[in-house]
Length: 422
Image 1 (tube, helix red, strand yellow):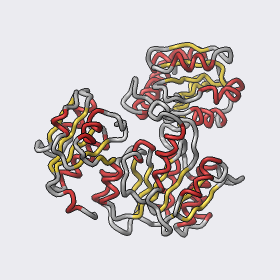
Image 2 (cartoon, helix red, strand yellow; image 1 turned 90 degrees about the vertical axis):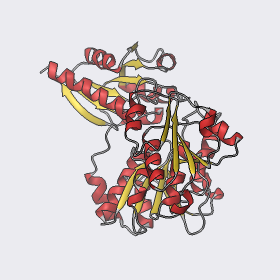
Image 3 (cartoon, helix red, strand yellow; image 1 turned 180 degrees about the horizontal axis):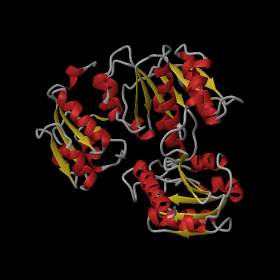
């Protein structure tokens, strides 16, 4: 690793004890830092993570944030879910303490070549495919970041001959300073996260940070078919490579091919991998079938664009299960397509009334208090040939710890139905 000496004996506070917070705490402790972790939640998840901390020398504060916990620190590291206006971040700025994100911390230590992928949709698929293609070429690659495995949990294993395929969210990019990928990829830009950002421009500014430190020795891969993304060429010092879908490749695959070409991998090498790729868990994942009624888990679809992608790729009438935490998404975006595909919608979570209003007059809607109830209701409404689709268009944090938990509960509910109906 690089720059390890910088962190020795530093007093560092970590805000958030989810996966990335836990990984940061253990990494920094191994580097000789004096580590503290604070999380305003005190639940099964945070208590479990607290039990996985390497040493009782790491101080943990659960169920609150206190000012004294931040005071006199040399550095504060924030987890992706922590907003810029969160109270401990405000205190850190008051005390003039530098605040960085988990990916900034890991990048400072990382000796490997970093390929960073962002965009409103498709990040996980592209990040995964880049990793698979590099692996197929015999190159050692770590697939991590917002995809589920924290960058900081893998960085100790890396050397300078390795590659990192890194999914980065706008939240993570807010807290970078020196982060400088060799290759940056911006897949698309659509309305999202307006629960966090004041407007679309502020959201775009966060995304643009992915290339802010790149120079002429680096590459920026842009979607030529997205007018906002295409226009970013004027704002970078990196060498710009464009991608666009073709008859053989969808937009995600085309982006992967662009990255592969930079790395000296030919189209045949890309096509061999994409042909065998079965998709990622929680993204258009076939779960099972009962009486010719199919169940599809698309829990990772947290935007209307993602739900539209799912609807385009499903044959037959759809019973849609949607809802969760509203992110400022325009649910009306899918209506033209939805009227042709959706037979009924079962709505859950905090956003159910907003979605119900957006769908009014287009097709029937019904509410459910739990996801299990929604699955049961959807099954009762479905007929042979129909598809029950979980494609929430919302984040999961009102009812679940993450989209994986939401998807797993959906799958478990479907498995229970199969067991009881066979």
